[in-house]
Length: 79
Image 1 (cartoon, one colour):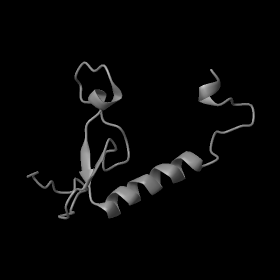
Image 2 (tube, one colour; image 1 turned 90 degrees about the vertical axis):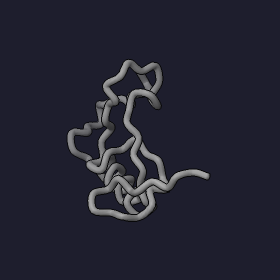
Image 3 (cartoon, rainbow, N blue to C red; image 1 turned 30 degrees about the horizontal axis):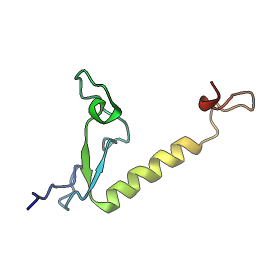
Image 4 (cartoon, rainbow, N blue to C red; image 1 turned 180 degrees about the vertical axis):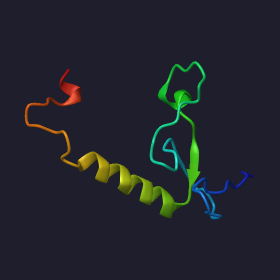
């Protein structure tokens, strides 16, 4: 039997059914430990589906903003 975890979003009492590396502010938070993988390097948070969807929407809208993006920039994967 697994223990239920409360949503980590401030003020939410729902079950945190989704595990995410995003903090409630929408950023990655380092664990501060020596890590050899992405999974070990960043804290885990639990969110209810509503708050996880809200965080993901915020990330995508921030990512898609045209601020500081010029046609001369190459994709990070091109390097």
